[in-house]
Length: 450
Image (cartoon, rainbow, N blue to C red):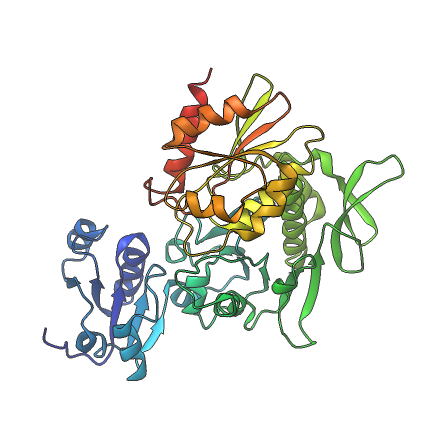
């Protein structure tokens, strides 16, 4: 392949929805663009050729010589920046960025930046709904819903961005008005060398932030920042100054609080479980940082019923409630769901459906909560056997060949007052198109019980 002569060439590495948004953004600014993709038939190929016939597309193995001709590489979050051809270009002085970096260079409104191993989509959505309730012109996107480069750049009062560790690796100019790492637990260990590397990627969100929100219950979320950066906190534990918490009054009713000021009763939240109380508290802390009125934040909390596939109520049958947490694609997410539901069940227990592609993570942290809350562990997918071995002795284990068998086994094992929870602690691609497809199949199988 002949190198392309250009004083300023941008190569978009990886097509798909995000890559197309990058091409549109760059061509609107009259930048010369080339697209490369390791897949022979990448998603978005036909749309690219129809809308931007002047933009070359090269498919297959990345060509180091071509990448070295670029001024910048805009790398898809799905492709590691450690890919040899990308690293070789970087060594030669080519800037390696992502779509979020392009967005941040031009965004004028304040940014609420949210990351974490778990709950970032829920909290991002909640903060967006709080801003809507306050009457602001808010744009929500990033790693959730709308790619950042498809968000409007004019007539916006506030951006709320969910950011993945992969996106943060290629972002240098974020400078959020307020940023948070909600929590950190092992995830994407098939992409990172160790937890330290994953932690470092997540904490890039704090670079240049004017304010930060910190989870007091997770030390790994606390940033190393200068004393001049304003801090606020959230916790399910003891209240303190600048802290959002949940506390019981003299009658035993639990309230969401800021320091010692009661804001709203926790039982008025539509989302269920202790983990969702923490999500509500973090959203309030973020909203307060950008001056959202308390009334608007409470209105959003009372109205928000949760996101699909995130501890979503499916139905009740024979006294057993069924919940779809297919978005629980890592151990930390499943831990949060187990603790969140298990601590509220009284005499009931959880029938946990788990398994899939574990992405190289260890499941050992699940053993204690499984022992405490789980009546039966029903396992599917590629890493079912490994999960069973690492939770050995904690509870009854049932192997199932597919979701239909798993749901029937769970229904047989459950007693009135129990919940059946699909929270796999694994990715879905060994058996399903994506986590949404897995959750839909679960809901269909539950529906066939009736």
